[in-house]
Amino acid sequence: MGVSDKWGVEISGEGNVTVVSYKAATVSNVEEILAISKQISEFIEANHPSRIIVDFEKVKFFSSMVLGLLLDMRAKLKACNGEVVVSAINPQLYRVFKITNLDKVFRFFPDRESAVEAMSTG
Image (cartoon, rainbow, N blue to C red):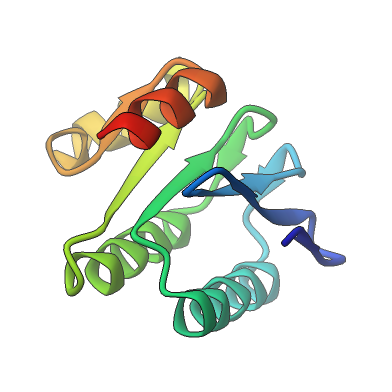
């Protein structure tokens, strides 16, 4: 595994967990988000992962479309008892989750490593 594209998203496997990492500091271009969404959807359909970590370590800003993408991923995984969690999100972006009450929908981890550890055992 280990899919990368020009938009700066990497999908990789760590044990039985899939990690989606954003490589760009800003994720706001509509075409970029649509391409990322398509890439992730195709990956989910082809691989049927049950656990996905979305790693925002390098992201400083994202558009609200990214929230829609996360909810779409969650719906696809929930259909087969899977889970999407968020790791390494900065405090300003976390506020967006709190304002929209999505902080109650997703689990958050301080970094990728703790998310991988929690998802691998649970």
